[in-house]
Image 1 (cartoon, rainbow, N blue to C red):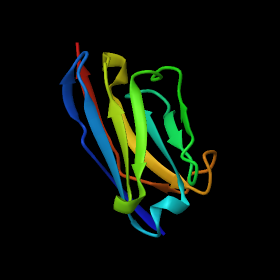
Image 2 (cartoon, one colour; image 1 turned 180 degrees about the vertical axis):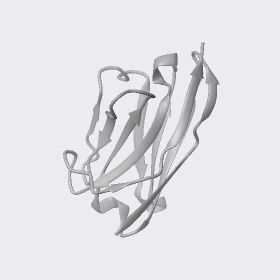
Image 3 (cartoon, rainbow, N blue to C red; image 1 turned 90 degrees about the horizontal axis):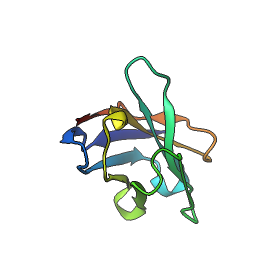
Image 4 (cartoon, helix red, strand yellow; image 1 turned 120 degrees about the vertical axis):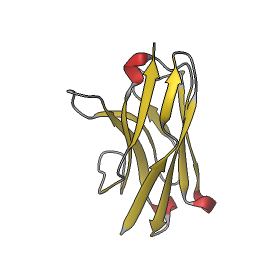
Length: 118
């Protein structure tokens, strides 16, 4: 079992930056692929970015390429999402998730709200 807790959300102006953290407890975080997802009001949850276990390969949604960066610190059991050049359309609840590979997520955090004002 893995428990995930997101933090770092908040209100920021267009063009601003935020860094989200996803802290894990339980099993060693390095054994899992980790992804960030988001869900805006009235919309389906969508994939934002994922990072594999081991090699740390990353995969980004086109909408965030060049603006968001995922990284992981296995020693701290934490994955980060650095979000730059934020846009109002990035407003959503952001969730981190972990699983055996990038196409399967078995554990989810409770989410953190990101609001980008225009």
